[in-house]
Image 1 (tube, rainbow over the protein chains, first blue to last red):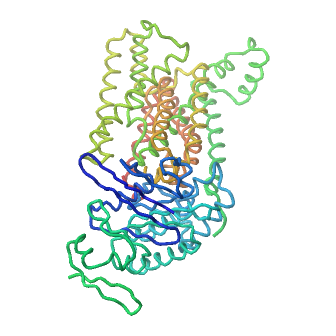
Image 2 (image 1 turned 180 degrees about the vertical axis):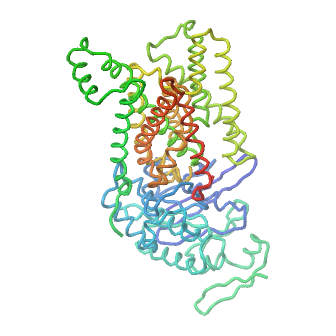
Image 3 (image 1 turned 180 degrees about the horizontal axis):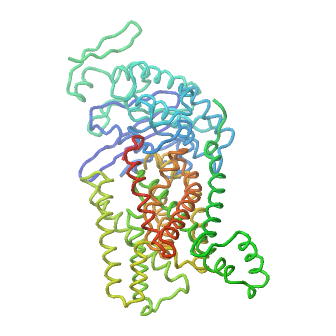
Length: 259
Length: 346
């Protein structure tokens, strides 16, 4: 379980995140939505310890995040950021193996090799293993980074949760891979020891896949809960300044249409 | 997918490089103003260890001039190339090298300051004084480049800021070197000017021991951090997510670069382009794993500098060219070729 309590982050006079309190449970897909500049990425940075909060606490399985050393944290928490640029030629499997770096010193152990193989199969990048990363398309690179990030926390840890943060993971993907990735995430959540917190822009994807939605606006939580609680006409209008039409599918799905 | 560990596609080339280094070094010792046969070398090593007083002239040239020079050349080439690997990894940029970030000119400044004022100074650390003076100068100039480029970075792309700052700081420290050579009395001045262009002619066993210690130490420490440098290829944030203490890493790597390059520079002067080109060539041959780049860089740097030294001694025989002229004359066109390579983004 991941808990944020009254988290705030201020840079100069600008408050990026203001008193955010939220719980993220393992086994559920939690998505953060909100307009540009709402503090979505900033919240991910605080939750993943890229950035220290000015106030408030983050708890990983009721342990204060501040007390976990970066080296230990890297074994249980992985982060997919936006726009990773590599300036040097590397083979795809080398990039994926970087995800295992926190787990071995010197040469990779058999478990590390196995994790890489399994995760590359899982994300369907096995066939690119020997290709130069720099020659891949944007979408292919993104899938390689999925594999790398998942390799980092691939094996379940007895008695501990694993944490995965995704900052706009779908940016470079076409609609097929967007759906495929979200479905794979749902697969990964089945062992119920993985906490997944992601930022997405596409509200309909959030509506389709999220178990829990946090709607941010100006650094504050405007609404959180199930999609039925969060994706209301009033909430969306307050956050995005556009009024959506809400369509209900027969299976209780929600579809938002703008304009 | 076949099972592979990081390193396997790299391994094959390292023994080849090692053999090439050995062969080229042997030929570099063999040729010069006086040719020394391989049997002379073997007998010199035998006599030198048992009865040093019995050496003939050729054997003494071998033991007191050629051998230390060849070894110094290997260590300096290795140090400069490793400095290049470290700086390129740190800045995630393939056109950065120790000369660009001020390390070499700062080291030259520190060393020439010591040449001119050394006799006045109260501080002495024996034979380590010159390398230490160079390290201090190198550290000062490198810190200047880093700090100034960081403060100007806000409104410019970081590489541009670094390049421009590097040009300015290098000019400043080289003007300092020029100033010292101008005010210096004659014998000192000559050594400073020659030394601006780089030369191995002063190599002796004292230098070889210091260079050897620093090179081996540098390689050992560098390899410990190689994996962290690999994760840094994806950026500082990603490295942090992989558990790397990025601030400490940057400081350690910078210090390591200063140590390697400044000590080499203190004995040979500024030798350009080795640190820039060697990592490129290795990456084109195999890839970018920094463990490979450090070991392969040490070998290939040693190889290239030995070849350059051989050329510097043979081209105008019996006179000798400053080696920096050779490395720049070869390195600059190679670098221009690399700039046109579309595989890299700068």
